Length: 527
Image (cartoon, rainbow, N blue to C red; front, side, top):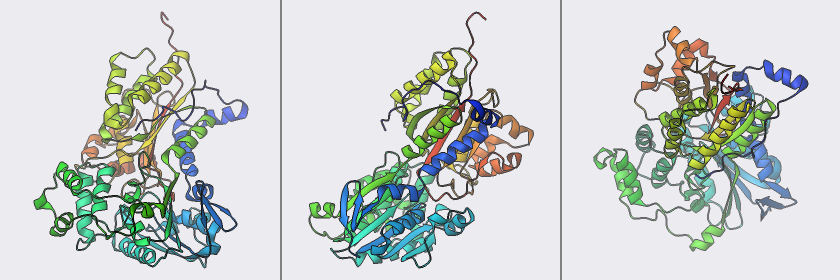
């Protein structure tokens, strides 16, 4: 995805002064990295983005310049990790016109939010919205399927006089499982799990999910027709494509069987290895539903708006980084590809930025070569290297390189971990041989939902000392990587001090990657 290098125009570094500077200097790079990550999450809190995106004037609802009339005709459904907080804020704004609602949210999130004192993200007593928890550890289950059935039933009863407010956030696919009969939930999960384990991208996974689901790919909008549908989306997909976020339940999408078969074949899922029910559904003629009205009428009855994204999180992270004494630079909110390539890219950028002399000419070439593999445009990488090079040559202060996205991990083992922890572990090994903090770089990778894979951690913080630290404690870092066991590794390493443990955050806009570069002493030629 073509993006400008930075959400901030290049600025000369202005260090904090006075008391603030003294406080900042006493904070470790590890602590400052965690502060910046916390700021990223704070900016995309669900109540914040809904309050900004859903405005009310009397009995008129305003969303991105579009107006809708409220006359005690409002129904609400939602699904995703951030939806509970979104629903609470929506009910505060339009609750007097709300007839009923159903939201599908992660298992345990109400208790977790209570424990973290986030009462503003909880529904009030007497709410007309029914909360259904499910999808423990990010995996669809029978509870999530029951919630999806309730959502489908609510939408199916609406008339042309009704308004359906749909709240969608990351994790929505797992929380809205509605397999096309006769496919069972287990069969659908097995197919998507095998694809994910083989390294399929989120785009490829969603194309298959749409074909096997009653509600994804516009299925929910179909059920709600002829009601007016207004969808508020907190994006967790690179580029914010509405048809891919939660597999696009309110976006009319044609399913192409040839495309689905191509994805399955690309990752080794042969026809013989698929359940009979899946082959039956994919062998049916499309479209999936009986037509309801003409195409223009269907489109006019659905309005989708993205109200929060990774870019917003990175922008806030950059502001906090500047407050903490760094010059913020955003590389890209669309980093993707195999975690091994992504870790190599960050390792090379760290070596480039921290070199006390002019880096060898082959280093920039190697960085640029990784662009296509990691989803980062060559122009973005060139700008980043220019900024980092100028900072090194001219003796600027510390730099905070920020990025976002969602790399993939190819599963080769049966350990416990997630892409953020594996990325942090791999980057730590890439940094080996560099100086330790505070003179050397620090890297952080964290999921904004607070849950990296089926673990309690959001990610981890690492530096050049990781390899030696693991070795002295008898931990074989490479062995843990082969087994995809990064959470176990970081849990055992130094008592888990490097783990990022914010708890469930109530939001989700993919991941935040952060490379903190300390001030590099200027080496004058000839001295």
